[in-house]
Length: 167
Image (cartoon, rainbow, N blue to C red; front, side, top):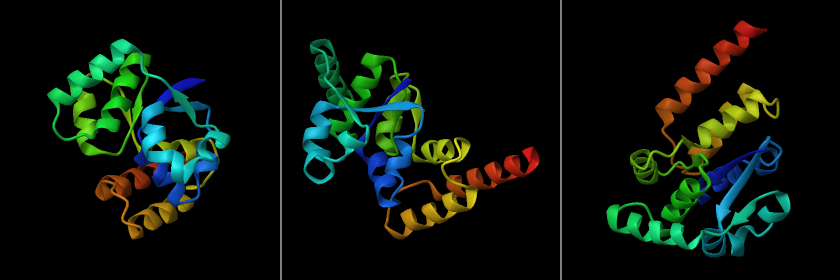
């Protein structure tokens, strides 16, 4: 099962649309740094561990690398940079929707996915239909989740076309 490192915002996106259970049914191991979990998720979302979220510690070398990232990049928050450092430590993709973190991850040569990719995986693995995804995106937009809405709509149109072509 492929390990994926996540920041908290993608998890919150899936919680907002009540698709977090389906996300954990995907054939991936979703993992966050222990400090990110303790500081951002534990109080309000402790059930994520029962659902399948994994927690991983940063090695001492990775903590040093995290500190270097904090000096190098002004914008991503500290916990976001811990997620980036863990992705680098584990040679795993990083899942984030945070643009500042995405920019830093690209500079650090880390493979990136985001909420759009997770929603696509839910479609590909038959947990939701394209129409469900459209509805979920609308719900995220109404709840002020930050996604690149032009890209979301174009991506949904592309998926819809490919599904119609395949069936």
